[in-house]
Amino acid sequence: MPDAALAAAGEDRIAWAAAQMPVLRSIRERFAAERPLEGVTVAACLHVTAETANLVRALVAGGARTALCAANPLSTQDEVAAALAQTDGAEVHAARGEDADAYVAHVQALVALEPDVTLDDGADLVSAVHLLAPAHAPRMRGAMEETTTGLLRVRQLEAEGRLRCPVLAVNECWAERMLNDRFGTGQSVLDGILRATNLLLAGRTVVVLGYGWTGRGVALRARGAGAAVIVCEVDPMRALEARMEGFEVLPSLRAADRGDVFITVTGSTGVLRGEHFERMKDGAVLANAGHFDVEIDLPALREVARGGVREVLPLVESYDLGDRRLHLLARGRVVNLAAALGHPAEVMDVSFATQALCVEDLVRGADRAPGLHAVPEAIDREVARLKLAALGVELDRPTSEQQAYRSSWGVHPGR
Ligand SMILES: NC(=O)c1ccc[n+]([C@@H]2O[C@H](COP(=O)([O-])OP(=O)(O)OC[C@H]3O[C@@H](n4cnc5c(N)ncnc54)[C@H](O)[C@@H]3O)[C@@H](O)[C@H]2O)c1
Image (cartoon, rainbow, N blue to C red; front, side, top):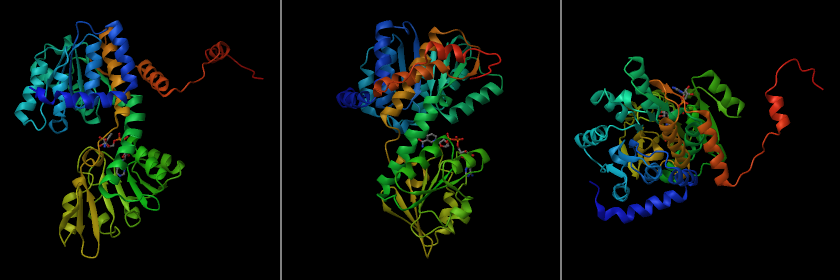
């Protein structure tokens, strides 16, 4: 159980995050008035952070009994867990650094609650329901998954014909893609690199490997900081998009001797290898923003570093190639989490606002068949509307004439 003595510090953190989460706050206020989740049990296996605590409190305000365990034992903020555990209607099963047995026991404790809705970051909870309580899975109103990796696992369950509840693919909705991946990761990846190195990006050449949802944000932010940006891609459509955005597009081997900073963000493996390291300039910086630490080939990097490896700054290792040094950040792990603080609370505000509305939709909306489902567009629109309202941005409304025009059909001679 979380240590109650830490609760006051946790409240401060939760309040700090809450101040950056106006969209979720407006949903929480409506939930408190309407109580749409009365009598519902929600179980969430997410990072136990101040932002998540605000989601849990919104669900509790809506009437849900809500239980939380950690999706990653290393990201748990113990003081937040302590504060949240004192909230009526919420329970927390998490401790920073918990071992594998404790981690599994905490997931199992949530399964034992027979939740109506599960929330996942990596699909451990929904997998555990299917493994440990298969008869309960079809009784659930549904589940939600917020990561690419988790969705792969859910898709595998579905492909094997074993998925027995509806799952909303939160990871693929507009809020995740546009705000979270592009703006949240884009900014925080550069934040991690700058915190670790304190480099001036203006005037330097940054090579972004992978121009997907996340890579686009990284490239955009690097250009904004004054860097010349080269994009490397394997997908012709993404490469063309990068070119049309004005980025130089090159095969990675030809970019290798041009870059000052290399950022991998592909979701693939061995993207920067020995043949790249051999061509890189003295002082080149290597950072990874992809999920796993396999995008930069670390064994190959150690092999070319004939002069050894030395940590020259916290989270900066210098690999001595004899005539040159290459600097690896955060041991090749996700640089925005290892060297910075991950996504800002404002980004999580939009993600978690979406998830709160998804819980409501699963509980109150029409029954869904077992299987993977897209987040309803109406939820994306509502979150965008609330976010604009929080920013004080107004937009036009179509006139009735425009609405009629856009919903008519036939042969229009035009004017
Ligand atoms: N650091 C974070 O906070 C964070 C946030 C979101 C996603 N991610 C991770 O970032 C990675 C990318 O996610 P995404 O959503 O942008 O995926 P995505 O599929 O939209 O984009 C990946 C891009 O990389 C390209 N690619 C694949 N192999 C390549 C190679 N060898 N060389 C060059 N390009 C290559 C693909 O063609 C694709 O365009 C994943 O591992 C994801 O889990 C990290």
